[in-house]
Image: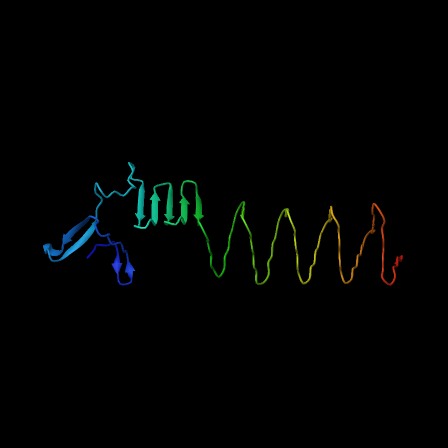
Amino acid sequence: RLLQPHSGSGKGFYFVPEIGEEVLVGFQGGNAEKPYVIGTQYNGKEKSGYADKENSIKAVHTRSGHKLVFTEDESILITDKSGNEILLDTKGSNITITAPETMTLNAKNLNINVSQNMTTNVGNNMITNVTNDTTISIGGNHQIDIEKDHQFSSKNYAQKVEGDKIIDIFGKLDETTSETLHNAKDGNVTIKSAGISKLLGEIDAKVNKS
């Protein structure tokens, strides 16, 4: 039998000493035939490795290397032997989660609230799949810089610009549509080229006043 801080059927605190560890044994009613383990003990040979002068460190450390370490006024650290880590930086008011391989979040709903800045860095590819709708609201400016190609595909596409729109293309512009309509409601339409301007129609080409 082993003394535990809490025990019961299907619940409790379960820490059993390893074979060969030093334990303190008591005897129920002083009966040598009814021993029970009161707890384990460190000794000159078996040391915890967490002792410090201020007694600021409290830890749970398993045989394989899983650790839960409390450092007074500093941090709480949860880590395993593979390098997965959760660090609560008490002094700096930060939380750091580290996974050497893959991190997965599964939830019915997920809310992320950032009161100031947010930065996302992806070393390779990034894929986002949304089954239904996506809404993005931006209170200031929006800038996208793409070093190579950009492809966009949709069933219908509506674009609304409250002010001016400027498009600078340093190469060739090639548009193919089933039908095209340009309508300037309040002003003029100007077509200008450094060379020859052509208006071609397979059947006819017309320029009318209205």
